[in-house]
Length: 491
Image (cartoon, rainbow, N blue to C red; front, side):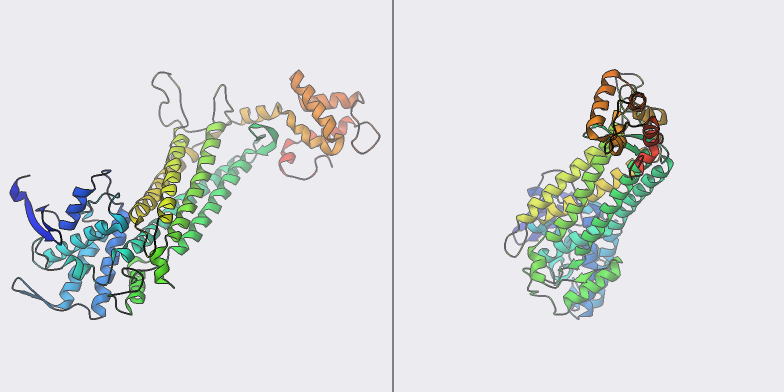
């Protein structure tokens, strides 16, 4: 850039060149220079949440009479003009009009001072423009006006809470869509009786619909965990300022801010019952993150089931067929892979890693402040983004279009000797185990073998001194669907 592409600004450390067109200022530029770490930028949720806090603060501070008329560069501005310009600039940021001006790497100075000052400077310079000034002239001061009655130490934890709550309904909607898709498949596949499997070995029968109904219920339970943990995020510590004491904030500021933030965001929010705890602890963020980790583990388990159930097709289970969305190999023609399930696994592995970071950062807090909040914020918002995107893709491109391979599922069940378990009330465990061993050795049907032995009087009743009849064997094993409905077979 040429020299005239910059403007010179000054902060407490001295002068610094800032791009002439930038809405951010010297402190943001220092952070850009100091932390060229990942090339990542703040998530939209973090930008929005900071802006709604700044907007609320400008309105509350004006209502409390804390803005004064100001003379700047031969211009006179009333307290209301100052407040209104900040509110307008913050509203524009909330709408996403200045996202490109939020340039500080997530891996930055502790507590998030750089991110807070990025927001303060962008809003101050945009408010200055609204009042007729140029960026860098600061008719509106980043610290004295935009950051009035605030500290990074109470703003950032409040922004973490608001940013997560801002997207929680979107997250729950994506999960609800997945749950509904599973429930639809549970109904569609209810009449397909197949071999259950435990330890990846043959087990008693289940219906394919029962497996999918269980997936739906697991997602429902995880949604409830997310809702429960999100409740703790609704307690806001804004107004604690630097350490929780509320120094430099009006006595009514905390309560008014929570009310104003509720109005502006449409979120249900509550006052903190202990501002010191709200400053020290990130436990509510950890709790919410943990609910996302639990959800991720559920999704990993389901994705792996999909990979197993669709394996083959010629040499695997092949009980479900996933939609063919792209070729599966660059060398093997015709190969189709379970790519959406593989994607879901990878995405959820990433979510689990993000949760680990949140946990480690939360325990690293010391005394009156947790300085690891920037990475807590980034990882929480990234977890939500990845879950929403991955779940939506998996639901639409894998679950809704999958079909069942009835022939293969019922074929495996026909070969499953473990259905002998239904004969336990009739012949007992020991005779059943012997039947399984013989059936596997002969590659024979357990039902046919048991009837053959019953006709030869080679099976004894478990509790009576008499042979088991072929009719008793037939009664216990004639309808395999009944074995999926509980109760005592043949009883």
